[in-house]
Image (cartoon, rainbow, N blue to C red; front, top):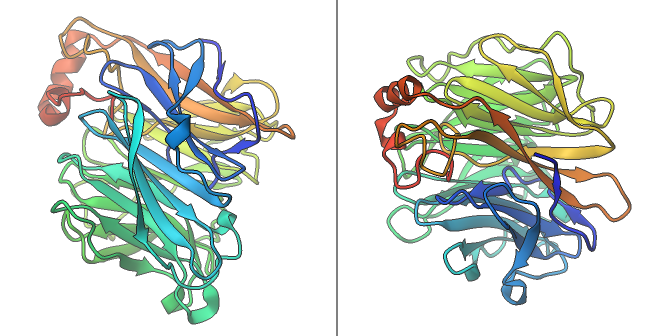
Amino acid sequence: MAAVQVTSVNTNRQINSSRVSVRTSAGIPYVIVNQILGIIQVFKGNSVTPTSFTIQDDANDPAGTTYGSSSAAIDSTGVIHISYHYYNGKTSELRYVTFNTGTDTFSGDAQLVADIGGDPTAITNLYTAIAIDSNNVPHIAHSQFPSKGGLPSLYYMNKVGGAWNAAVEIEGGTNGNECKHYDIAISEDNIPEISYVNDTDGDLGAALGNVNNATSFTLFDPDITAVTSNVTSIVIDSAGNTYIGYEDINPKIVEHLDADAWTTWQTPIAPATGIMNSTNILSIVANGTDIYVFYEDDGHDISYNKYTGSWGSPVELETGTFNTAKAKWARYVDYDSSGANRAGAGGRLELDYTFTDETASADVWFNSLSLVTLDVATIAAYAVVAPSIINSPIGTVGY
């Protein structure tokens, strides 16, 4: 399909956010936008294959002059969970709001952390990432600023048990490290896994929770070669293997095999061709055990490459002057949300992504990468490795 413009007024951004688009069980896409004025907005596509997007419940969206770093994930009831930060100097906050796609309304806007510590100096120094587990519980990775050195720390919190649990520091300022560029995924065992960059020593970090309601994390650095990434992106495939995408001149992938200890990772691999723009980001998503990597290339076009144990060749998707490519949030694997494939009748595969144009008044755009149709044998194979996914209320793409 042709790219569809989501926003048309003001200046919009999606920086310091992990995922910003989702689909409902009916296949309708939604995009979460952070207006430069500080407003968190939700836009709804007009169909499964959208030709336009319309802002929803604008009267009640979270609005503050320094709101930002918003990330989104959708649960099996069609509720979108959104984490974001409020920059307010030394009393900056972590906040959270939900959006019900059944009624297209916001609710529950709340302060989760009243004071994240030291002064981040700007909203652009704050990060969030959010994921939903199989019980529809949100898990958030976010920034705090412990007093030592005024450096950003990676923290984690969740709503297991029905109320928000205390934030847990994973790594950061109290150890003299500066941790940025977070992403989070929930494993097939319902365990949070988080990727990030330790800017102090240039390492790529990976953190594994001890349980679903994680109170501690096992840490490992899968790449210690002076990583230059402006973002990390983590995903778990249909076999339970974890992949982290990041930027080190080229897009790069590192894999953790499900059967291995968390401290054992494969060698990071970069493609032979396909240089990224060194100031921007990438975003990855799994389709089965194939990993798709979306990024801004060195010509400022939006491209993708596929990783299947080895890299393919880069494919240009959007020609122009663009940045901030983000694949939509998907739990484990990502294919058609219409339900046709779960019925064994084939169905459409699509990998949604958003991106932003590089103009004085930047707009957010939406498009989908269409893939081949699943056949009955492929569906049956997924049912063996991940039956809870195939049989879930929303299949595999609404997540």
